[in-house]
Amino acid sequence: MTNKDLDTRFEEAVEAAMKMTQASLPQDVQLRLYAFYKQATFGTAVSNQSENFDLRNAFKINAWLQISHLSIEEAKENYIEIINSLISK
Image (cartoon, rainbow, N blue to C red; front, side, top):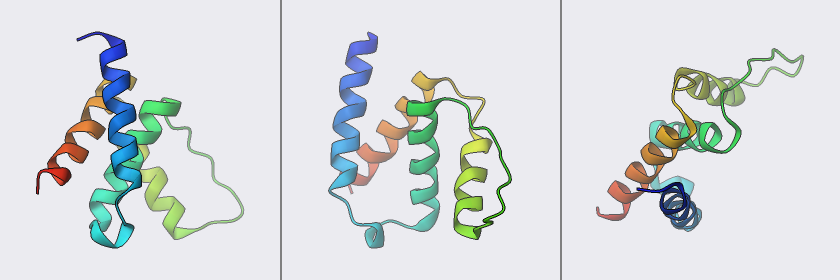
């Protein structure tokens, strides 16, 4: 599979995700999607402790850091896989 195929499939998955409501997704799924999306679009997370500590953001950054060993391509594949499993339910 070429990168263009992967990028196209990722963009389609992102569009499908945008149509989903947060209330319809469990929080652990939301965190995993966030982490894979960030890894796929920005690369490895950099932990920076800010003065404005926010528990919600701490969970999001932690989820991203946990998958920071994945390549951008792997993160895209994981994101697509989760979205496709949610759509097929």
